[in-house]
Image (cartoon, rainbow over all chains, first blue to last red; front, side, top):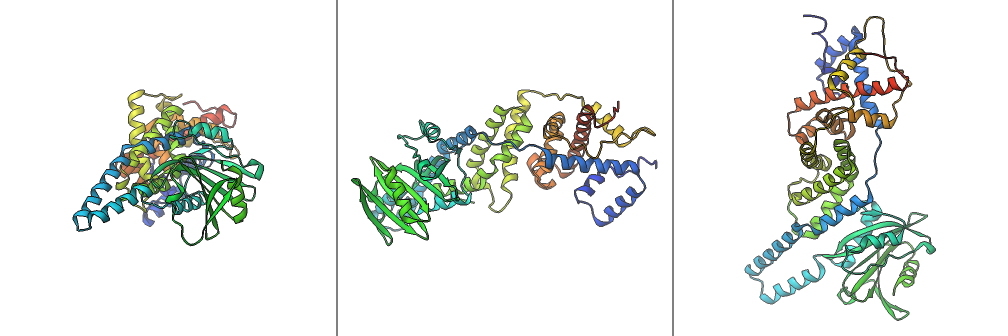
Length: 264
Length: 191
């Protein structure tokens, strides 16, 4: 056996990546004690791994790509297929003995809520965005740019609110489904890291349950429905056939005033 | 996992898959060397992943799952589109590597310890490595997948990942050394 044959070769890499058995590791380390060549090779492998891990630039995702992905998912036929299968499941419920009337009520409820109550989902979306669990499709501080993004992607005119004068900077937004309906979502953050999340989607105030914690107010001729739960305030109002909701934590009256300022 | 509610399915998918977009985009960019190809590849990856989301096992590595789809989408499309060629032939890089780890007697041509490569040099050097070896380096060293996850992504045995990674790292080292030599950190070593 020549000296070259005895070099551990790619076992050096396995040593670096900690994939050797203790016996093989001891053998390679023993070889390294007397072989300058393998020392240099191990050093080279270590340097290159470090260079790639620490020096390679991390490119930002272009905002247009996030938007393209969101739009592609929203239009994907798999959603239609899922909805069809849900109807099939409803028929099974009927077959299992529920009355036709009960099935009709259930079907109407699903159609109206999309399987989730808008109040619960608005709260869920707020916590998801605040925690970073839900990503913004488009990141921009320019309300006009975000409004242009929604144009053609949302089947109604979207008015992106500008809360700059109230200390909230737009973070971005995206097309978002709420209660089974495609709508527009936009998020803001103030200097203290407090979030405000607004959504616009087809719907009416009358579909919202009036339960514990709900409050009705009127301001400048516009009716507002306010829900408070676990420190979060949700303010709903109607603009034509579109339901708007503003979600914010912290000061309840401040959140309501934000909604008053933007409602039309 | 089967989701009965399409809205919940969509929400779960977005929660699991969208945070990986940056890693996917960066990887696609390095595999294709073209921003438009990378964007197309990422979009197609998300669509395919969304359609097959029921096959994803919650709690497993979502990034590895998405890379498997990305690799299939980007690499197959890219290979069909064109055969790329790096700035240096593989044989030249390999000869250079041999000289670096086993220099002629009395000619210790080493990269100076202070010569930390610029990020642009690492990017360019990585691009100089042929795609089959570069992919192994990206998956294991950049995206920190295990050998097993990389093997599943590439659809090959672990031993193949190991050998591609070893060769990729060697070629990358030689390419980095060439950039260091040009920047004056390394004495000329001609193969």
